[in-house]
Amino acid sequence: MTGDRFAGPEVLRSWASSGSAIAGGSAIAGVPVASTPMPSSPSKDLVAVDNPHPGRDYEVQFSTPELTCVCPLTGQPDFATVSITFVPDQHLVELKSLKLYLWTYRDVGAFHEDVTNRILDDLVAAISPRRMTVHTLWNVRGGITAEVTASHP
Image 1: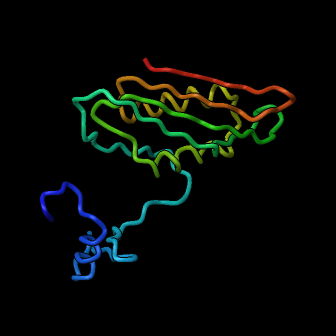
Image 2: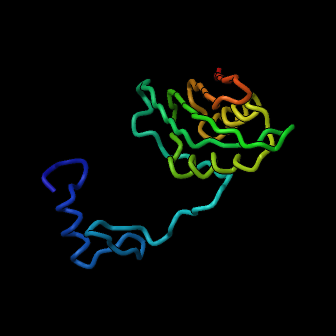
């Protein structure tokens, strides 16, 4: 490398083709792949990773239209877009663990307000952000759209 902080694709391809590996992993299209795959089923385990800039306030936003749960009264599915906005302190949340965490709600009977607040509580417990807001926009049911916003602190 020539003083760059991150290796470009050409460096990674060269490194991978030289027989090097990450923790016994292999390479796909010349890019090293770790040998320990992450799970692909719902999991409540939110993985915290170090914040590379803990001395600076900056905002992170994640959004997905794939949040689902079921109505605790009717058993009908509910679909929402969830947006998570936060200012990290010492940790960030790893995205695949967040995705797998959100999947855990798909068979849970819970009200919209409960799901939104539980997501906030679990994320705050996992990464202790300086500030965080979780906003859910639920698809129309019975002609009514529901939006729920929960914030910390």
